[in-house]
Length: 323
Image (cartoon, rainbow, N blue to C red):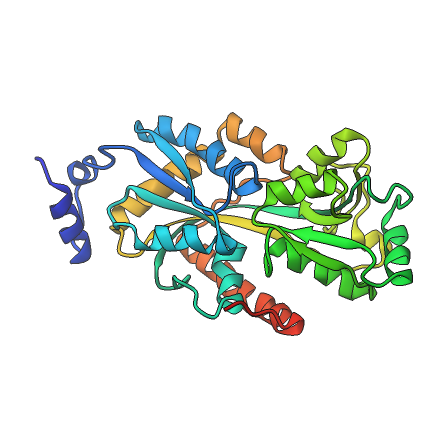
C-alpha cells in the first residue's frame, strides 16, 4: 500500500490511526534541525552531535541549519513557520522556550502553541570563567572582593540580553552583592573569544566551553554553578562551596512545528532517543559535562511549566525588556 504525504497529514489531522506502511513513507528525504545560534556554541555542538547518528537511524540525511539572532528568536520563528510535514525539527533551549517571552515585547513565535514537543535532550551546568585581563584574580572570593571594591569596574559578557548566560551570572552577582558591567554578544562563541582576548573580564559559560577556554593556561575557571563538582572539572569548586546555594543549568530540547503528525513526531523521538545513547553522542555529552535526558513530550511540557515562572521572576527583578 502506498500513501502520499498529503494523505498522511490528512489522516493524522483527523486523528486516524496510521498503519506501519503509512509511517514507512516518512522520511523520504533529508530532515533539517534548526539551531537558533551561530556555529561554535553548545547548541550547535549538540545539534551536529545528534545529526550524525540520527542520519544512520532514519536512513536519511539529518542536516543542521544555523539561524541565529534575537536571542534565538529568529531560528525559533523559522522553525515555527515551517511546514508541519516532519522534515523540520528545532533544537531549542531554555532561552527560546522559557525566557524570551518575558524579554521581547513582540516575540515572533509562541513557544507554547507553535511547537510540538519531542524530547528533552540534556541539561548542562554553567561555570564562571575569568580571562587574562585580570591575572590577579585566582578564585571566586577574589572576584567578589574586586567587584565590590570597584562597582562596575569589571565587566562580564553573555550571548545576549536576557539569555541564560546573562541571567545566570546576574543571579550569582546579586546573591553576593557585586556589580559588573554587562557586555552582550550575539552568540556564545564571540563572547568566549572576547574573554580570551581580554576585551571582557568574566563570563558564565556552559561547562564544556569553560573547559575549552581554560586550556590556554591564562583563563581560569573560578567555580561551577552546580551543587556537586563535575567529572569534567574535578578540581573546580562549586559555588555552594563558597556559600552560594545556586544551581543553574542550560537545557536543550527537540521540537517540531505544531500540527506535525503525531506518528511522525513519535518516530522522530524514538530515533532521537536511540541517537542519544550512541557512543559518539555520549562522547559529545561528556565534553559538555552533560548526560542524555530523554523524556516524553509530557515530561518536556512539565519542565517548561516549572521553569517559566522562575525565569519570569528573574527578568522582572532585573527589569529587562526588549522592543
